[in-house]
Length: 265
Image (cartoon, rainbow, N blue to C red; front, side, top):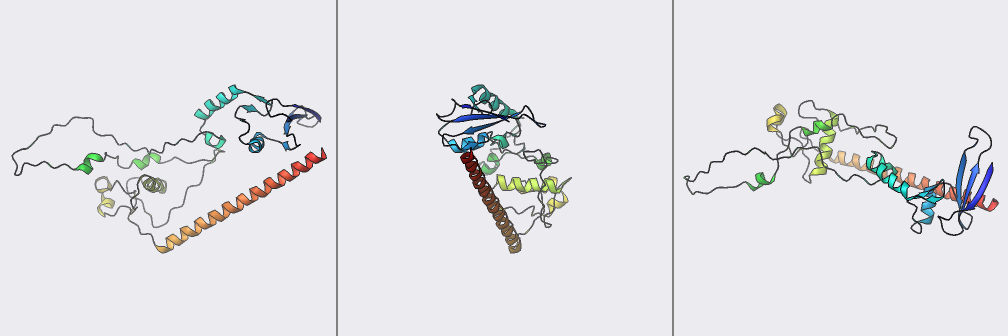
């Protein structure tokens, strides 16, 4: 291997850039880039460099391969994040729009109104609640049918398994549609989720459906259900704690190995 170590003017004084060119093997001709701090600490990637320097140096437009500041690259990255559906996994800003695909438009057609003034008392009552609420399309949850979430590698994530006590109501009902309806109800409303309490909704949901409740039959949450969910949360927290501990130990081992390599060099 051929090693070339030079000063890096884009970083604070004392920082060195090392380029290692491979001379043999299948990767002959390719090069690896490393950076060394004034104290001799070795850095193999830009994230490591960013964590070490913190807020002292802005590395947003720093090109790790060339060791130069490239503002044009930052602008290209911003444009790519704006159109990249996986930009969240690469540091892009999240899309905070949580609006659900519900059609809530008032009627645009003018309707004739007849004012009656001959009735006793001559008082006109107004239903304020009806005036505030917007019409909601029935069975809008079907728009989410067939949609699947995926991770950063575009692998489809497995959906949740709903309890056996939850049964769908409505045409062409499925577990995926029911899951979307329940999740949307929890997200959009602070009212209790009880399901469709009216028996008539099962016979003709197009008429008797309660649009403020998800598309499922009435259900009851027992103490046993609550304990099961508490156990799942506890196990998830334990798994997360173990993963964070393993990551911390791996980072400590990597820092120790790099420190030993720096002393040998």
